[in-house]
Length: 553
Image (cartoon, rainbow, N blue to C red):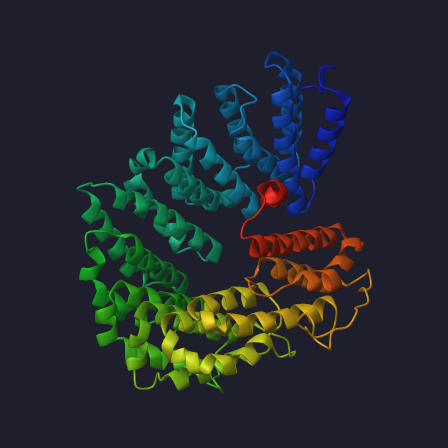
């Protein structure tokens, strides 16, 4: 192991700062590690600007020693090391060849591993290194691809090697497609074991690796392309005759073929593919039912006319049977059925309404049922958020038909409470229906006011406005999260034509003095963003010298 021989040329304040950064890189908290990696890059950038090239050697040596210590340590510390590599990969503080060789050495320590998160991050950093190019990077790609294929082919999956291999091959294929295309036949021969693996994570990693190869195949005008597509398609059909995990993997593959093939290959097989997928819509295994639900909109989008003629009625009947009040479908099925219905509306547009059972009134009833969905403990569940997302997509695809009904749906929408899903859906709805913006703004401000000050929202000048008492400084963790979300939403949601300076004074500034730094920071950012909008509205322009720092926050 290298000795920690730090030269006096590295100033004591820099050493102390680096010590703090590397200690934070050892944290078990991902956000702390990410922040430390950003600070490491900023610190080294500052030193590079302030220090002549040769004088950087002691600093380079110290960083290398600290990185070496991280990669010799347990998983959390290795994750910090990988975050550091990710931050430094394009920073010129070491000669290129030396840096690539050194970083590759660190990354190879991380494989194989039983930690999926470590494998994912290590593979991602490896892909970034591969994109840097150069003779050494090319040699590394060849070596790592060969090793990954050996792990994928191997009958024994020791130390999660197969999963690691899939991640490596995916990243390398995306980064250096010309080199990995040479191994496409080897990959297609080996990947089916992983696609039929009992582990869901393994199958999902396998289909992502296959996707990367399908993109490469589509981008190359190779005479092999039709035969490669045909081999994948028939292997998928073969897998449907196997166990449930094999059937699931094959359905995933059919979905990838629909999305990433060229030359009308899947158009010729569209009817067969639809018939095959629909056979599994009522399968006893939940993950198979879910993948079918996710594939239905993809089929509709691929060949809308054929789908509308031959399959739309059957699909709508299937979705409605799962979503109607009193349905015995599992919550996971209902959640995905709402998302499928929303995606289907976007794929088919108003054609959706040509199905006799799918009137706009029937759709609104189903949406309302979903918005009132709760868990067995009375709390909000994923079905309600999925119904909300479905509503936003229906508003985008069937705007004129939904307009008479949307006002009546806003109360159940807001009864779900403030959440990122709510604000995202409201933004989509208002984009499709601009006349609704003012009403949504008022209702959203009321929700935010009740969180920040525990009173309703009153527009400026209203008699009902009251001076508000500051909130208690100590809140439960869930209250703090809601508080941060309310502040963030106030600063980011489109609140044009609403003068909010008084609202900020009365409801936001009290949080400048909150005990938690995150709350203080978000309160200040929100106040600044609103002031920026107010200045722009009043003067018709902004002042970059004043507000430019906000873009860095």
